[in-house]
Amino acid sequence: MHAGTFTGSNAMTVSFVIESLLNGLLIGGVYSLMAIGLTLIFGVMRVVNFAHGSLIMLGMYASYWTVTLFKIDPYLSILVSLGALFLIGASIQKFLINPILNAPEHNQLLLTLGVSLFMENFAVFVWSPDYRMMKTFYGEINFHIGDVSISLVRLLAFVFAMVLAGILYLILTRTDLGRAIRAASEEPIGAVLMGVNIRRIYIVTFGIGAACAGVSGAAITPFIPVYPYVGWLFVITAFVVVVLGGMGNMLGAFIGGLIIGLADSVGAMFLPGAMKSIISFSIFIIILLFKPTGLFGRGNG
Image 1 (tube, rainbow, N blue to C red):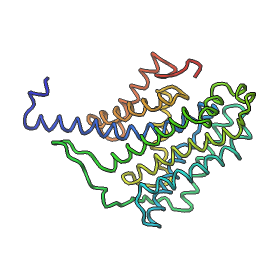
Image 2 (cartoon, rainbow, N blue to C red; image 1 turned 90 degrees about the vertical axis):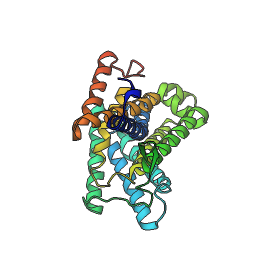
Image 3 (cartoon, rainbow, N blue to C red; image 1 turned 120 degrees about the vertical axis):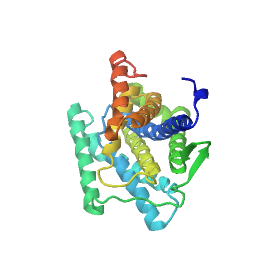
Image 4 (cartoon, rainbow, N blue to C red; image 1 turned 45 degrees about the vertical axis):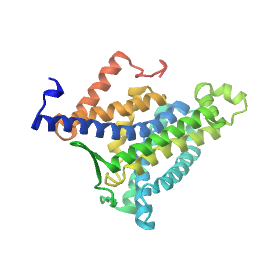
């Protein structure tokens, strides 16, 4: 059927489809940033970080309380979430991950899962399990292009996610720190022989990965309620994106996030509630059937 033949209610259907795809692309950009933090940690240290969702949750709380207590713009609070989560992530790596870095992988999985449970219960103890919603004067503003409506807060979340992803790309490709991180990822023994302090690189890398989680959490706080278990909404998606794009591959995480965002949006058009994820998981399974290392996997995982 040609779009030019649509009239009346059919034209509204086309607008609805375009609007849903745009919303999927916008949230997909945030998924990309979440997954980039996760895949950066895995790519450098080979640590599967199950605490990533809880770090996103802490980023949301950091933003929420900064806005509530100091009455600043929600998007300025991203700087607070970025700094706070970097320090939290660096501390987790230095004091908890580092001592068992050479232990069997299941020890790291259990440790990060334990850290996640601790952070969730800490949030329940300190802030209660209540849902909290951030109110902004522009939270209900939408742009209209014909019959297509675009939420301002979702657009801003996408822009901030893309800006941070771009800054991170420049850091990794244009700075000495980035070159040291890539060397530690690709050839750790060679990096040590060349004078790279690999332990410090691991601490900084985990901090950057946690900061990505914090920024993505802060960016969605204006339209997603904050509560202690909210991280589980995103951590499974982040893992799907990382595996789909190829473990340890930042470009793969970026593309994978956009694919899953669009797939979830298409699913929401035809399926009710949580069933919308059937399409994204189907894409995930099909791609892994034909390319088990993911879209941009290096073959050795």
